[in-house]
Image (cartoon, rainbow, N blue to C red; front, top):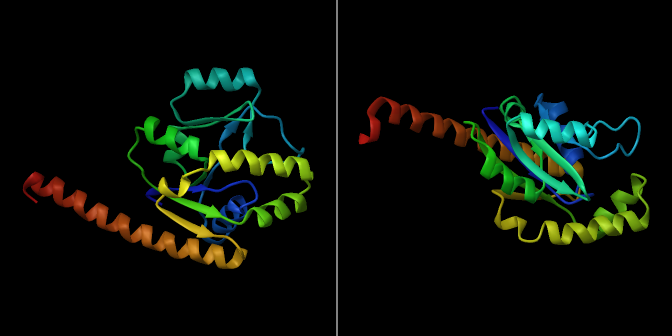
Length: 196
């Protein structure tokens, strides 16, 4: 894709599951961000895991495009990763930061995936989190995602996975149409300058 699709959603909203399905079905490349938090399990592949020292060094040496801290741990990505990816799961603080830091040419569209707190709680319990851990994440997300619908381009309710994936695929087709229009306008501006 010529653009980056930014996916936001609270814990248990199904955002990562939707992204994995989109990548599998359409061949999109997901941006896997860096973090200095420990793995939750040995086979976890949701991030590139670094030590705190490695993360601190990388943040000083690389062009960081998005950065946020959650639960005392750093999460970030580089401009190079953005330029080479199609989809990025990000939180609202990271989105705000990305808009300030990213200096590349890639257009971005943001999509909020949401579900009820009850659905999110059940999904977190189903994936092995304790009731207390899930409740803490829900409480944190109430604050972190407050007002998010005003920050994003579109929102999709995830009650049924297959239906939500199809909705997102339709939206991607609309974004791709928008990109064709943007390309056409940019070509006109290059050809005719500001006389268009």
